[in-house]
Image 1 (spheres, rainbow, N blue to C red):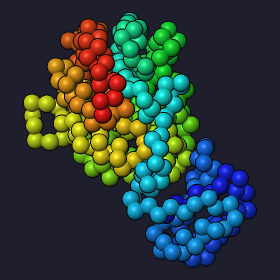
Image 2: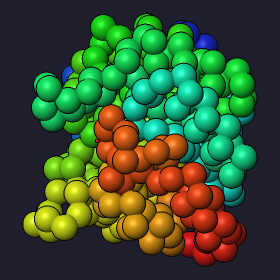
Image 3: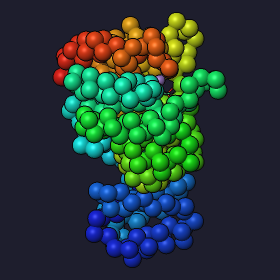
Length: 334
Ligand code: PEP
Ligand code: MN
């Protein structure tokens, strides 16, 4: 159950509600949300006991949420959430395209890509500084050097930056550079990282694990929300199925389902979902058809020489073609 407090609720009102809950043996967590003052999440409680608090001083309304992801649920908030990433709004009427290389490899590579994708209509620049690689012998990312280069690319183009943070130790550093922090698919249930990013003060893009159900994905988002970060963007990046011709399988159902179950914006990553450059455009369009609010696309000046994910990275002209072909779906066919 959720207890939404009025914006004018005093500390005494909040304490009185908590006291009532605790007297009834009900566990509660207080969440401070920028626009709606305070929400109290009451766990494992009998509904009637909580519902009886609806007339208490400072209480706006008591919501009965039957989903386990309470704050992420559309039952908690009917309007779609719009996440503002340094002025770029994700979840509104425009499809937001984030583009850039899998990994930041050099100054020339990231600056050339940033300039090109901006010209072609991307609104956010992506680029990995810390790379989660299956093999320890593969390129692991340039770390802080890459973060400096991303900063330079932002200064040059004005594009906000999204980049992955792999562990709690790196959060302070990555926060200094990124406009939005990416939680990679392999880290979707890294609960220490989720808890830490709940208080980082920056929007978070939460990738779905290739083996997670939509419920698990939304519960991972719940960690961020209950910890105090309301700026969460969900990203579907393909799940592992039996197909071997593609790297993963874009779960279009999950995009539509997450949009129905949750008020959070959902974007799609057709690059990792397909693993094949020639499938990125059709998968991107399918994602938009299913209701995605944006796309994350890997683009590289010379994919054949990329240090990671070259086979799924678009060349500049291919990205330009994709952006042109998206014009119709961008008018919201969904
Ligand atoms: C990436 O975005 O380059 C990446 C590593 O993604 P994922 O975590 O989805 O594999
Ligand atoms: Mn990649």
